[in-house]
Length: 412
Image (tube, rainbow, N blue to C red; front, side, top):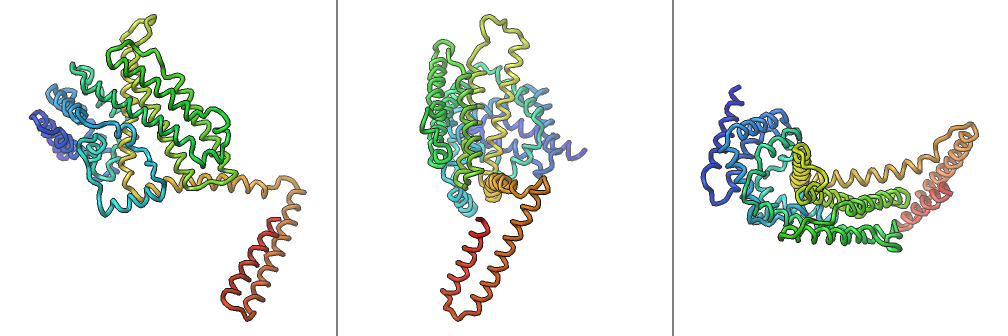
């Protein structure tokens, strides 16, 4: 009880500090998150309890709610947000080993942060490498409750919001162009040559995203409501995912690699991020159809969907940034996908050694006997080679030839 009371008092003090004017809203937000952060990142109960306290305070105290909302909006205002929407939580294009080297170097020489970028501000707020652990432990219902409690829609000045929407459009364009370029990677073309033989869905996705963002930009500039919708773009996103699935299927039989696994994972992350951004923009820009009455339930449902998308986006971004400096997470995630492909390939090859009838069993038995005879003969050759008077290079060539020809005979 004493710890809960102390946590509540610390939250109230952090929110009251926000009611005082600050030159930069970053420091008060960092203090608030430091108050929410549990000492043990895996203590999900404490994290959820403190977050519940925060929701209760801002729901019951209008000055605290207004101050927190003002500081969060000020954190977005005037910052460069494109990299936050387009890059946070997504693998860079440096490749597996380059990214591994970058993370190892930054353990010794941390990267310089620039507070003018929103992405760096988020990293300063969640500055501990295990922050994503306790954030994941907070239920999504509680996160949605927090953003609804802020009542961002009550803000009269929408300049900050419109600027963020414009930068989200820029981020969507960047993601679409990157996806189009990754769709022409030599590794993908090698495994799926039809990308070059017909219209590539990756290039069509980039063109469609440009048209959609151009329509929304006209709307932001004071034009009519966008005529374009996201349905065609969603179809192209699904087609891109279908190509990725086919590439993975061919890689399971032809062979996979670290670079291919890395590119496919980055493409999936980029497609998911583009889909989230487009869905948020559509819910924000497109009004309900004219032939459908704007019932309060319909408007509330749209607002809930927008909050859900925002919570999902922040979860992906913060979780990805939290693991961005981890060496073990980078190796584990990439190697896990690679191991999955190798295991799948091995399981396909292992189907030849499964018998269901008596004849198949004896056929496998005869094959095993033949292979055993060859292995025994290889062992004898190795013993004879070891007793020969040869130079070190001679031993190497003799052993290598023995293994090479022996396993070739076994394979045949």
